[in-house]
Image (cartoon, rainbow, N blue to C red; front, top):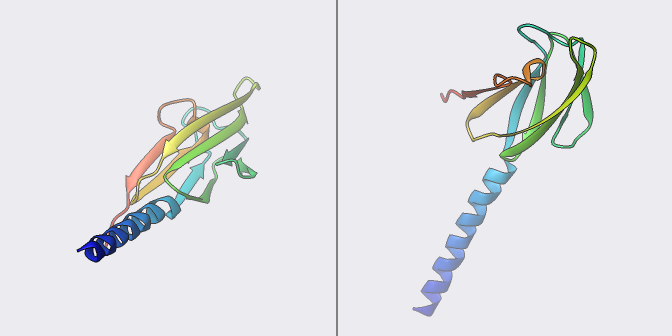
Length: 120
C-alpha cells in the first residue's frame, strides 16, 4: 500500500511540474505597430521584458517573441508638441491568444488588442 501511494504521488508531481513548465515556457508572438488614429510619432522605441531597445518607424509593424504569460513593455517617443514621453505598461497573454500592441496609442485604452487564435 505504501508503494502505491509513493508511485501515485510521484506521477502526480510529474504531471503538475509538466503543466507548470508548459505554461511558463510557452513562447508567444507579439505584434508591435506604430499606427495612430490622430497622431503617429515618426520614430518610437520600445523595450519588451527588459531586452534590447528596438526602433519602430511610422506606420510599420514588427514581430517579437516572448516566453511566459506576464510581460512588460516600455515605450519612448516624442508627442505632437515635441515632448519626449516614456510609458511603461504590463500585460498578460493567455494560451491561444494573438496580441497586437500599438505604441502610437499607448496612452489610450486602445493600445492592446487581443484575438483568439483559430484552431484547425
